[in-house]
Amino acid sequence: MKKITILALRNTFASTVMGPMDVFFLAGQLWNHIHGLPLTPFFEVEIASFDGKPVKCLNNVFIQPHRAIEDVKKTDLILIPSITDIEKTIKYGAQGLQWLQHHYRKGASIASVCTGAFFLAETGLLNEKTATTHWGYVDLFKQMYPRVNLKPERLITDEGDLFCAGALGAGVDLPVYLVEKYCGHEVAIQCSKSLIHDMGRSSQAPYTVFQFQKNHTDERIKIVQQWIEDHYAEEIDFDRVSKNFGMSRRTFERRFKKASGDTPLVYLQRTRVETAKKMLEAQNETFDEISCHSGYENSSHFREIFKKYTGLLPTEYQKKFHRL
Image 1 (cartoon, rainbow, N blue to C red):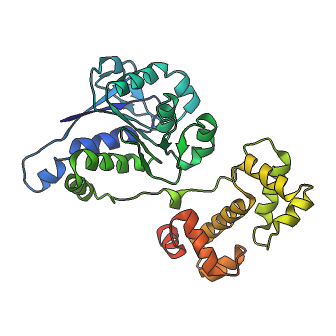
Image 2 (cartoon, one colour):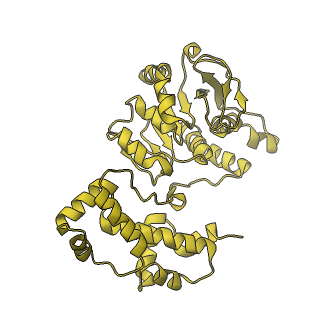
Image 3 (cartoon, one colour):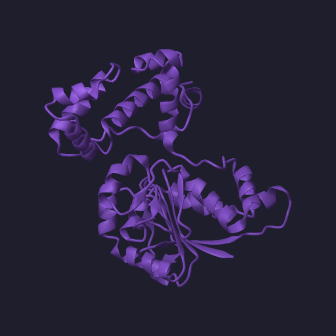
């Protein structure tokens, strides 16, 4: 039987502690109970806090841990839930960081949910490895951990013994994924069906909102970004844009990419896609009409661009997010 330790951190989302705990606890039990079969639990699950005392979650619910982290002698997997005050949690979490490194050296795997990836990355264990986190914290993560190969479009990343899951909702996707890894496909399907959870989600791209990255100090580029956002529906010639803003095309491309993280063309495409997403969510216009409003006369071309950034066709996106 695998032993799993969930680290309870102050001001976490309670669901990223209790949700995974329920999935691991119910694996081999809920399905069997429904079908009148003997219960066959696969995991021993415990919650640990830094000092063994109750932890207050963001919603003011207190979680009572089973023990302090120093009393965990051996475990197979440690799960880090989401964290809210990221820098403060890391600053006062040195004890937990050392504990994670210690158990990793002893052979434990480590998984993180949502912004818990920051706490895992702070250990240095994710350096030169692939990770994901909540799409709203991508820029901050890249600034803090440039050596981590961040893949924000992925819902789950798997480095063999280090796992990350994207946003809050992935707090169920990840444990189901780990159930499959440790217990096999059949048990994972049983979990999925008994919990009424969709297996196989691999991307958080449909849920991502373009952040219009302006957390930089290049004021000239900020002005260009705003200009693109104001004129996205027009035909834009970046040779002319760079000239109008007093830069050569090469300098313009270099400065724009360095400041925003995207090329001017990608920034324009993402701005147009974000506009189209809002129209698909709120209006009943055809995609051809939305394409024109977004700056594309060729709706087939825009459909390809839309799928590139959202992972969905426009009709699929509208079906998923259109208002009732």
